[in-house]
Length: 574
Image (cartoon, rainbow, N blue to C red; front, top):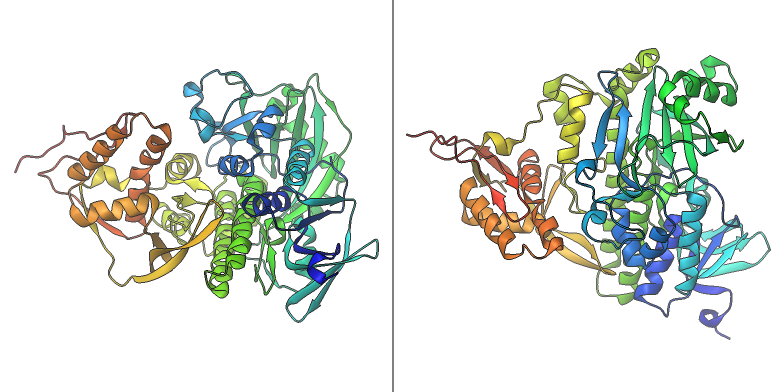
């Protein structure tokens, strides 16, 4: 029997059966059912895991994997945002993906449509991860639970096999490290890690039964609760009708200075936060207190000759932004696409790997930077002033209003995944959060200017990677000073408009025409509603030069759902 037909040889071997590993496996089998894919998971599911608060970008990946309905049927709470005590004053404020007042009651389980396209889940990872891993098995992956990878065999930078604790040796054409913080393949290959942040925390958490939800919105929707104390912060995440995850995060140096056991610090934090304590009045702890370190890091290499890092093995950003699982599944999706494309042999292998690695590093590093910003900007950490000052100094971060916004955007508001924002937040949400964090001058330049000129001076034309429906394709983009302008999606439309027109009123009229022509298509309307945000991103990244002409209306852009409207009441006559 040849090696390729051997029971010990596979096309792809995945270490780790969490969300990242399951996503890689599902998408490989979806787009090429003939691939032999094996997933090794050292534990036996179900098992608990932190990282329970998801972000909206995960939902379309679940749809693509074919398991949205299974996840929705698990009756996890619908996450529309968070209620926080964080920033420059002790008042609570809401951060929302979808406005609570617009959330409509609808029966569950529901389809991925309408308002559910803009929401996320709060998941019990014992259930969520089990759903995804079982689904990967149903898709045709060879899933082996309770199978620990004892050794990674290699020759130079190439992986040649995996030795299991059973003594069996497995070989594959490609290997994926989705082993989380263990980083089994990463460590075996001695891949160096960069620790770009001095942010080093300890997380202490437990699960509770029958805690009250802080807020109930419609059928099954809520917001997670984030509460700053003087020396750390609490999370309160309902995972289902009766189970809640509650954790406390504190800087490791402060933890050491306290000289208390984790259980004491945890109990003290819950007692000090009276609102959370009230929600626990009739609740009981499961008595499963756990701790972990969460030190932000980034692997210097994300991909090699025949291997890929995905999820936390590739890097980690502080959990304050709830981005961990989202980054893991996005990276896993792109790793699967890259492997599929390598097999098609239509694009240069080095280019495919370079694009994957570059995208991963940018995604993780941006989240690390934005998490640092959130900590530094939180005046509630009165016991941690030295800590936040050192964090700011390490970042070269000046929080004066005229410089902080520029620092926040230093990596560019536009990224190659066709999002506009920083650290997983879009521009609108960043602007709303800065109202509570610092006094940044964040008014939209579209409200102050009405003449927009495309500025491509000094930019180079390059091929960027576009990931869609199992394919990686070359998509042109402009690159200048480390910032990228893709020529597809919202940005492609805007570049075409700006090449014909510089007047914002006329650009809005063109956008309005497109919106009215597609008013019956909710997907198209969702896409078009983001054009103003994309335009602002282009201005802030320097791709558009904006100015004001008193002969034209000021830009007061709104999207009514059937089209865009411009406030014409502020025209200044010549």
